[in-house]
Length: 398
Ligand SMILES: Cc1cc2nc3c(=O)[nH]c(=O)nc-3n(C[C@H](O)[C@H](O)[C@H](O)COP(=O)(O)OP(=O)(O)OC[C@H]3O[C@@H](n4cnc5c(N)ncnc54)[C@H](O)[C@@H]3O)c2cc1C
Image (cartoon, rainbow, N blue to C red; front, side, top):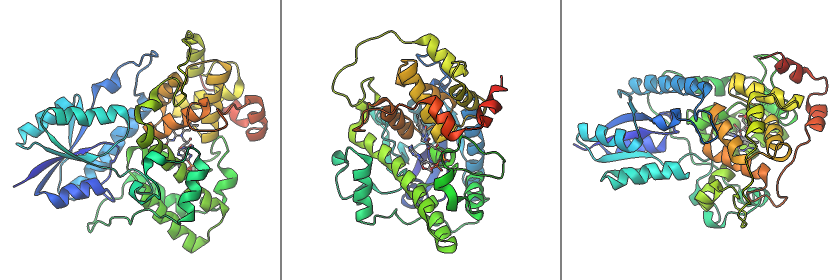
């Protein structure tokens, strides 16, 4: 009998999970595991913990959802502690197997984890599955990904590329929180006005959604991008397609673009100079500025409101992410990698590709031909918080 370990990484779902399905189909016995790596509890070089409390709570809840779903299919999720190499090799040995299946993650640390498992003699089968579109369906090799997002989107849209079909599971599973969110979002008509509302700084009532809030579920893999696409198409067929419903697809393409950028450039995206050819001069970090920024005490009201919201909730709208990131880089002369590390610590939707890609983009260290995006916080406040309601709301939070 062939038994294998299925290592859940950022794919915490059983529905529409090609890598998990492959393991179940190709082998006789699948033993699902998740690894809590203590390196996420450690301090970063910038002086704060790598995974903050909001992320930890969100992850624990998603593991509970996953565990219930696996149970309904007759599997038991084992949560391990240690580095993936140590924890998984000991687990595999105990179960008398040397075979691991998992999803492929194209970021340096995650690639190193797989390499370390292979180096200790385990057979590791990885499968790429976190994008909306399959890299193999693109009309170019990822090494030739266009340097500009619009060129990439035009190529995709010219060929009318679609995601792969959603894998259907013939089993009655308990509905996960992710599936409930997806259903609730499309049950109302928010998608019809998404393009007009998406730059709002926050929701003003719990029933409202100015943006989709799909990101936390996508980041941990509780929802797959093709499942979201299928729901979007179902919604358009029932309620009509418009500029706003198109714009949800458009934003999901940005998510793919940053994934493909990792497949194209790998480790280069993690240098201080990013994709720039010139190594940057060593200037002292503005550590005091970074601390004030993290705490929401810069003295710039819109920036402070955003940073307080992030620390209090583990979430921030896209527009506010742009404003606070720009402020750290251009006004405080901070290191963009420190900002990216703070977002990694705080955001419940932390996603290595989107976080790194967006920070590089704003810092002008990615592929953007305009070379960086500076947002003037006073003008942003006038445009997106004219009455000061958002700034007032978060100024009251200590
Ligand atoms: C500095 C900075 C850091 C960021 N870090 C992350 C991160 O760690 N994780 C993350 O998921 N997103 C990140 N983003 C992108 C974006 O801000 C969030 O995806 C979005 O705000 C999530 O809210 P939503 O799901 O309601 O998005 P919506 O506006 O409803 O968009 C729908 C989906 O499209 C995708 N998307 C939208 N905008 C972007 C974008 N700019 N880049 C990539 N994908 C996008 C997301 O998957 C999102 O769920 C970052 C943006 C900036 C400026």
